[in-house]
Length: 301
Image (cartoon, rainbow, N blue to C red; front, side, top):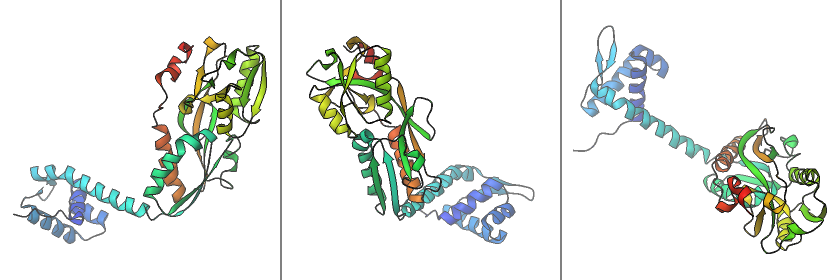
């Protein structure tokens, strides 16, 4: 005996009648005649071999079989809409201009883009990395989306995650013992540069600016060679560097909020990418060793 097919059109009529408890109101909702909806219900009942409604002059109530079918019908219709929607989304095309911090553009965003573009091959992403303090102001003109860093609790946009700023240095050389302390930082306008200078000055720790670069790769390379200390995020802590804490005489640093900013007139392609990045960045688990986690920073010597 073959299994009867559950036609989505018939299920849609069934759910409409079940929701409204009326063939007349269901017909109005479906933009069909009452007789057409009644015929669809009869066809569905004939295929299943059960009565789905107990009909009286005053009421239309679900039968026990109808109650059992209703949950399945809603799930089938929802999956049908989801499948059709996803196939339609794959046809979305366009160019999305994305601005992001250098470390996120190097470590976190590329794998997310690879997964996104595999599902939406007609969308093209142009990504620019650098200081994000001024990027949100250029949304709509230069960027469609921006992932930017803000002081904790002070960023607008959509909050994605919180990052702790920490000191880092060479894994093999005790640079932190030098006087004055050599520091490798980013250009003016970088929040980490501002925090590092303010923290060192407040702690009355002598320091000198040993290296400046827009490139996080260059800053990390100089730091790894034992030429300076720098400031990084716990979520993107470079494996070739060593964490410094207050036990090393380093002053504490604030935390930063990572936020997603969208242009007011962002395209459908931009909305799809924004939702993908929001989910990927928000749900990302840091892969740094336990000794580098924020709750154990103070215990690291």
